Amino acid sequence: STRIKFDINNSGNVSIKVNDILGKEIAVLIDQELNPGNYEITFDGKNLSTGVYFYTLEFSDINSELNYRITKQMLLIK
Image 1: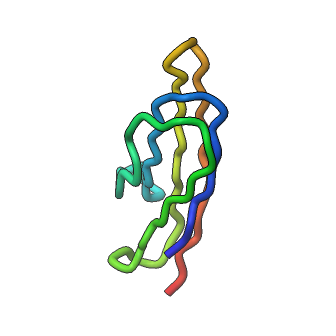
Image 2: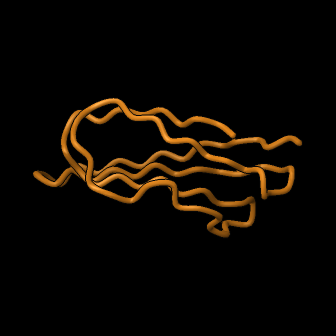
């Protein structure tokens, strides 16, 4: 398992999704409105094969048109 830490400065909708190397969605770790603060989400890959995975964090501010998206790579080794 791994922990994904992030912080947001404004209230907004946050989603974190995990995809495999082919782009297939593996998991939705969070998809909800959050208040400003620091957060930590745990991803457990015990049922997955060794390989490369990607997680994408998307943020949409509810009070403006601010949108943010970042994708990072994870390597799962068993």
